[in-house]
Length: 309
Image (cartoon, rainbow, N blue to C red; front, top):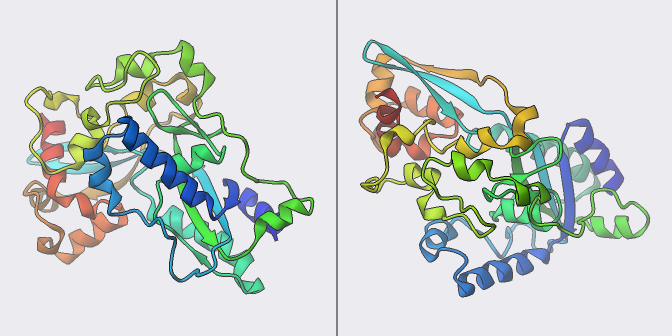
């Protein structure tokens, strides 16, 4: 079974690692330790913890194996008509993700379902999961770098009741969780992201990023921007690309972003109102949903105005 999954994922240009499902518990203990040591912001954790699912999906009552997947993820762009001016806004790799997620699920289900096994997507901190399983390594900027993709990688994780680790023990070691090197060696002699960060949230030493100062954290949230934040720091519709574009490891993966959406003046006008999703007309809701940006509708206008000035 593991060899069939290995073949299917590689043919789909996807990298992966498999790990025992109880590794989820180890991951949670690690996060609890970081909170106790003060290395992880309580505010940040509380903001995102409600979306986590440590118990695993109920539809897989006997979860046996985690499959962590990475695939190449380009930066995209969208055009908006702000008055008479066309504004191009970048969309970082991590946002347009639902199509990739569905693709990963389909590749796995095509192998597992005919054999009678289930598959579900648990809500887990996939970046940490990818690093802890050896699929990638942290950069100084705390992004996950995957061989052959740099930080331009999209990550997904699935759990199945298939015991793929038994296959590995029987002589199919492909894709099995490896001893993890948590941070890239190259970061010890490079500080490009430190100097490129528009909010100075990446320290010069090897300590953790100040996540609450990160531009992505600031422009994803509805709270007013801090007075010290220069609106000119924004370069993306949501999120930030500063550290990724400056990173030497990413040079082979930098490309001119493809424009994947156009918003006319009327649509842009509605976006500039920062309306909640339920108050947007259905065609515009569908357009933002296709970009996986509907949940940010209450901040997109604010961010777009920063790009337009």
